[in-house]
Length: 418
Image (cartoon, rainbow, N blue to C red; front, side):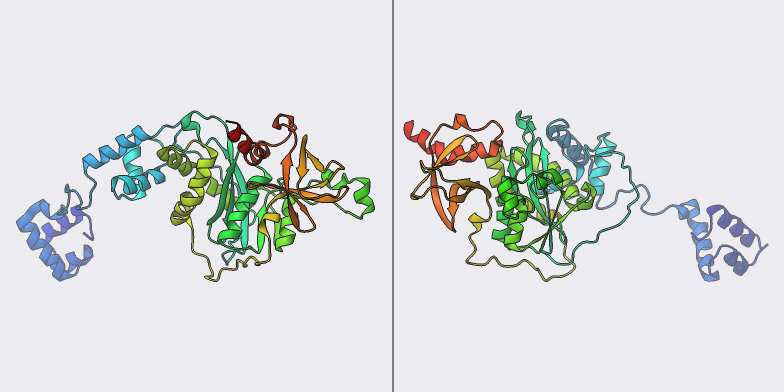
């Protein structure tokens, strides 16, 4: 009504007693004379029921039944473990639709769970600091790729308390993950395999954006500690692996001055952590190898279908990889090594025999990636064989390197011996 119930009753009584004209009473109640007359006649028949809405006390046609409300809350408590398997409310909304065919809005799920005194595992007080400058999204898909890695207890639900690093490449314009790869620690090998996915599935991006990890950036001390031979050769600084790869691929690199600067991928990691753990648990995947297969074949598409955005421009700018480019000789860790008189090179305590090369004293590069080890000299690849035991590998060698050497040099020997 356009006036309060008390005002309507007051003016109705005055009109009925003949003390006030209908037109004046209607104007006082903010009605037309015709409408006020209709309401007066209805009030005479219905009384105070006139002021009660017809749907009052009735459930909406699309209201959630009590049984479904109870199921949503009880099933959430059964499947959720705040210590090893936290499930946020948005993920639970998707699970209800995909597994139990219950379609509810996020707000409805939130209201049901909070009414049952259930708090979201992501509930926290946000301390919002003033933003100095906003960096807008790039317009084109493939214009800028953000690189980062996040350590997390991905298999805590299975009793594995170790942290493993998930490396990722995120397109800035769409928040699309174009590559993911997991290793024991954040390392060059993880980023290399992540970049392999980008080049294979999309092409070469225009620019990279990363933090100041040693993978991407050498600090001042490393830049100034050059050998005499390097100084005589005119070397100005030691280039990190990523800078070498980017020069070969013609990709420009920008370094973030703070984690907040690459906030898109930092926020994306929170979502990945909340979902990937539960997806791994549902499938019983407890190893890095199994996780990488699942991430590559299923999870990246799953994430992008839920959270990727539409770019400002529908023109992608990824460049095609040239046919003559040997990606294996680019996507690898390269270590300069000199072949000795016995035809071997040394690396991290190991002696590696270079096969089918008779010269010594020549300087080439030992190439290492997840696909194995080989020796590169003047653009030609040479096979290498290990001459001593894996136990002689240097203690400071990364775990992923030990795994590669075992898989491609010792595994076959052990299987034949068995």
